[in-house]
Amino acid sequence: MYTHSYQVIDHFWYSETRLFMTIIMGGAMIIIMLSYMLHMYKDKSKNMAIFALGFLMIGGSIWLVRSQVTVTGTDYMEGMIPHHSIAILTSERAQIKDVRVRELANDIIKAQRKEIMEMQWLIDDIKKNGIVKTEEEKEARPIPKFEGKLDEKTRKTESVKAN
Image 1 (tube, one colour):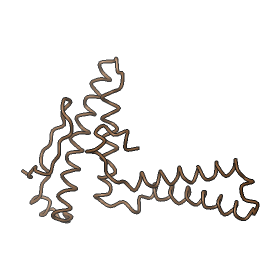
Image 2: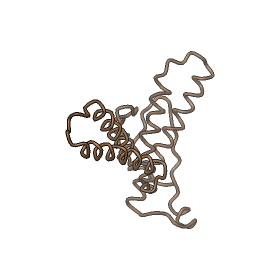
Image 3: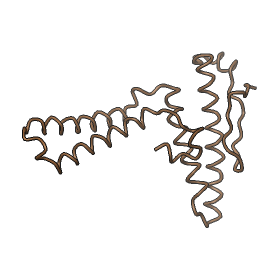
Image 4: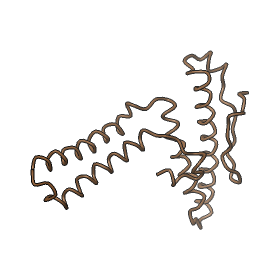
């Protein structure tokens, strides 16, 4: 899934949601493959246990994806960066002929790059300084103003200081 990102290396962040979707695929593979190989185990209870495992993997992972109970603030941003990167890839490389749609795609590219830089900065800031819990802390640690551009990659934000 990460190979669909625009900048595969820079936008590779661990994401619980992607892990859960992978487990859903694994559960489906268990069910489909065992359905074709029912005679692999002579003991029907083994087959039933394996089917149950597949359904449990699918059901549990769907619940985890839908509820997002394991996702924290930084986890959220780490999952959103590859998502935004895919939007950049799609918007940049799509064979768009309509000028209006191209303009929309360009606006999406700029917005996604800006948001990726903001999220990268926030992740770094939270890891270094902790979570902002009050308006006073928020004003003391503002998010720098980033600008997304069409003609350059999303830049690293470690050295960027807040305004």
